[in-house]
Length: 297
Length: 315
Image 1 (cartoon, helix red, strand yellow):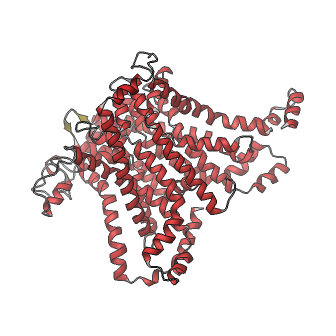
Image 2 (tube, chains in turn purple, brown):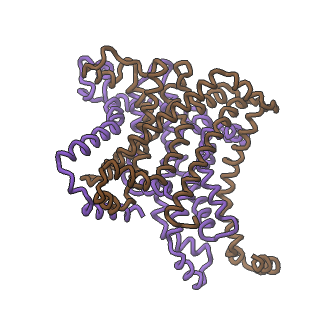
Image 3 (tube, chains in turn purple, red):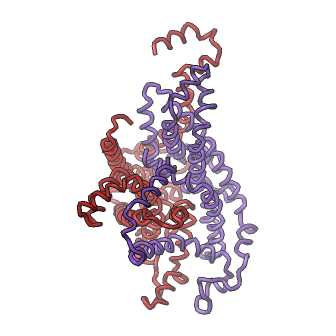
């Protein structure tokens, strides 16, 4: 769906009124503001990377060093992060939680979306609306009662606390997205399979799901990113250092009293961002279509 | 329905499992089960429990008793609470206005014919993709009192004489946090609005231009009305997420200096988890619900309007 709009746009551009704008005009009204936007949006990442590889004597001395460049790059901060903190544990925890929670959410969402969109049971519309409303319930108002529930279940301070709670914001989003994809698949295909004697589960597994693979990828990577970025549940439900996730660990464990190890903090921020940034770079189109798809539906 | 019920009642025993599974209602129930179980246990139930906890004096490690509106009465007399409500409204309003102004501007820029358009779009979305807390830590360092790169740049340009204490005074801290929130929020707004802009047919602009409309008039009378449906939904989401923001504040200032940047979510956390007053924290969190309902209703009416514009009658 996103592909077609992009193509339409390209076709429209070549025939639109763009030729009315001359180059100097475009330079002032288009390229300059765009460049300013790009610099501002990218600068924090650049600053993160520069700080990571800077030795301390350059880091805290702007008078004799150009702060925008590194004269003697060092891996000391990265080394401190990898070998003197629980960073590898945090990375492993985040990875485990994000992958398991995503799989769980996708499994539940695909079934729910299929039931709402295709089985058309009584009240399917109402349940679809309720799932959309569930998406609007923010974690900020749920974490206190959830903390007591998690504690009561004996899951406090374990990966399971996060694996079971992350689907609460993943399922509504993924279900909504998958409903849109299932809707775009012609119903006739399923009718043909029904006539050929396939059961409904066979239809879902052999016909509908293979056609909805782009939707599955969109929902999957989006859910993975959301789980990776989650903060408030991980902060409230996890207490011991080795069980923390990357965002919580970097923020709570790398600050010792009033001493901020900026180099190591930036290294933690950089290496915690890289996995999602790399994943994102491979699937940009899917991200954009899931983001805009969720808003459009 | 009736035939299904009859065949189920008299043929349940001899029917093979696969055939029962193929019954539409049975299958629908089984398909909804995992999602419903997870959402009811970890979303609906806590939502109700949270409202209930707001009426109790529960503390960490001690079950609470029903105390009626006592939490709300004490919050009503709590000047910190009202300061926090003010902070939250200020934060949400200013950040949302800036996000939408700049985001719409960026979307309009990106809607032009550009070289490397895909790359530009990828870069724009980057701040939104990386974990908020981690980019917040970068902002924390950028706002450092002694080694702020922003102060350094401004000083080199000769605009200031001494370094700005970005997070030290209440208003500076508020402005700094809003700037960080806007930085993170622009991509979402811009990319969503760009998707909306791309659905507007260029022939509308051409027709308007032929009728002598200036570029401002084309924006005001073609772009804005056509963008309104998607704008209202993006606005709802943006307001919702900004209003309940937690990560940025917790990472950069933790509410300081002297509670001037605390939002309702961070205050609820501070009172409930480190402070141990679960009941009071839950009351603060519950106090956010009326605002969220208002935002959701505006989304609902936005959706209605969208259907009407498309000429659809069903969802």
